[in-house]
Image (cartoon, rainbow, N blue to C red):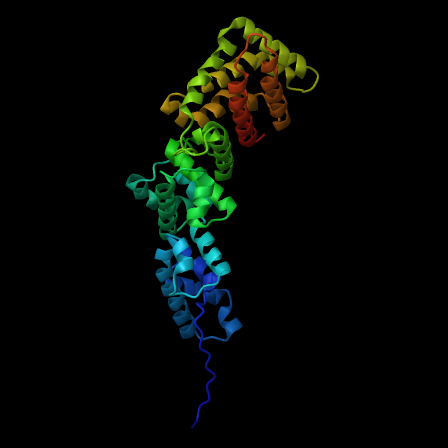
Length: 357
C-alpha cells in the first residue's frame, strides 16, 4: 500500500519559547513534558506523548549546544551552525541573562566566589528557584563581573556592548557588579524590606555621582570604585555638626522654612540635631571600607528608623530633606557647597527610595 508524505526541509532553527523557559528554569526533560502536557499542547498540536517527548529532548539539545555561544553573545550572531533570526537571538540572550529578583536579593553585595556558590543549595531552598537556575544566574553574574572589571568607559555601556543586553537589564547588571565590588551589606534583617530594584536604583545614583567615572569618563574601574578624593572631602562636612553656631543656625533656617507646613514639625524640630549628626557622620566615615559596606544599614538606623518612629510621611521626608539641603547654602561660614550638593543629592534620592511609609 502506497503512503503519501508531505515533507518540508529547511535550515531555520526552531525554538519554542515556552520550552526555552522550562530549560532556563532548570526543569528536567520529563518534568518539562509534564508541564507542556498540562498546558494542553498535545490537543493544540494533535501530538502523541512520544512526539512531545522527542520534541522536548530535541529542543533541550539545541539549547545546550547554544549555551556556550550565549556565554559570549556576540558569537551567536557570527556562527553558522544555527540559523536564528536577529530578533530571536535577542530574545534568547535577554532571557538567558534574566534573573529572579528573589535570587539576586540573596547574593547582592556578596563576593562572587566559590564560597558564595557553595551556599546556592540553601538559597535555592529559600527562594524556590531550582538549583540549576541558581547556578546559571550566579555564573552569569560572575561572568559579567569578570569581563567588565578592567574595562575603561561607562559600566552600563560596557555591559550592553559585550553582552548585547537591553538598557534595563544592563543597568541591573551594573548594580550587581557595583554591589559585588564594594561589598555593600544588604542581608541584615533591617534591610529585608528593601527589594533588589530599591538597591538597583540606589546603585545607579552612586555610580552616576560618587564614582571616579562621575568626574573622569575614561579611567579603569571608573563606575565601580567610589571616588576616593571625594570621600576624603566629605570629612569637611563635619563642621556642620562640630561648630555649635553653625549647627544652631542651620537648625533655625530649616525650622523657619518648615513651620506650618507639616504635622510632624515638632518632631522635626526636636530631632534636628540628632538627624543632622547622623547624616554628616555617615559622610565623614566613608573613607573606611567597613563604613562603605554599612552605608545602607547606617541610612536606615541613623535616619530612616527615627523618622519612621515619629510617623513621618514620605511627603514629610521629602520636605525636610529639601529644606535641610538647601538651607546649607545660606550659611555664611559654610564653604563646602559643591561637596555638600554631590553628597546630599545621592542621600536624598536613596532615602526617598528606601523610605516606605
